[in-house]
Length: 175
Image (cartoon, rainbow, N blue to C red; front, side, top):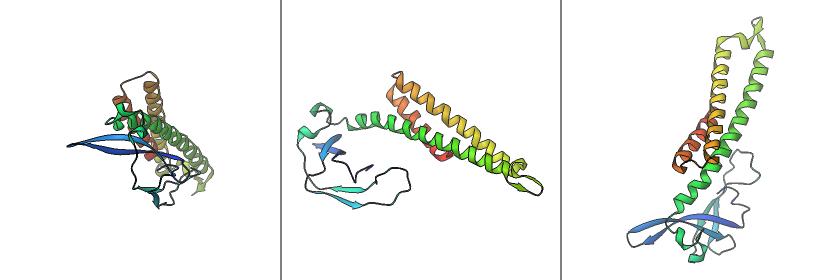
């Protein structure tokens, strides 16, 4: 859970059981409630000031804790996907920024480093991967902008969600 070590409330996805149906539903759960414990807090490498602990919930909440009210029972995936679009655009944009910085630093280093009487930048084994990285960086940046524009324009959330996931994946892998 992102920032789960400092949150006052958690948004938790739970399947509400209705006969044979399992209805994914989001609940707002007060962290002071008995029955919530941190089971692990792995030391992830990231720039966030807080952790990403694993939490165990052994508690019950009432129907008034359903995020969006009782009409949203069974619509947890829909609500969560709306938030994931923005989160994935945010992550993709951060990764593009990291890619641009890493690329600039790599080019600066490769143009300043000399070996065998010349810049290592002039060797194909160095310049070709840098060129591939520059192309990946430009593509990730354009895809991220495209997804953000589509989201702002109110495009079909399913389309935007998939493209946002693709932008995040592409940008994070390229960085």
